[in-house]
Image (cartoon, rainbow, N blue to C red; front, side, top):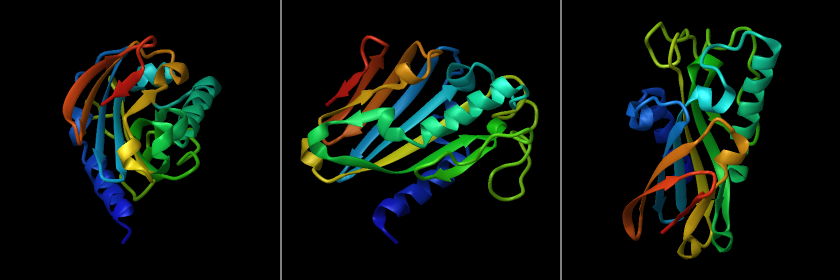
Length: 201
């Protein structure tokens, strides 16, 4: 199996189990990123309350909410519009793994929205036969999160010096993003806002 897709398979399993960023604090307006660089692989994990991204945290009920959920899926299918690595590194997106059970998003997407949200969104997962989360669980009534990971392959990894985060343009509900970076230069933490959106290392 191609090494990049082996990594993606591990990512999918991790997100499906609710690990990694799933433990972050649920604060409307705030989100968290984890950026990792290893060889040619650049991965970006995002954890955010759904309120920040679509304005609600339940299965879409109205036509407006269904359209918002569909637009979210379409945006997530184009990670190179949300995260822009150093141009000279020549990074291209390979796959996205998205977990938002309340919207019926649960799996790998490549180059398109994983699933068109419908009246059944939040009741049945995209893959398999597991039903949506119960009250109190991730994606159930009350708080609901989106967990996603985006994998890029960089042809010139030595030229990869940072990532411009354009989430604030796409999602007006975002006010602050706390980012953590792990790469060849070590680890660092950066707080991002609409006026400070560059993560450099």
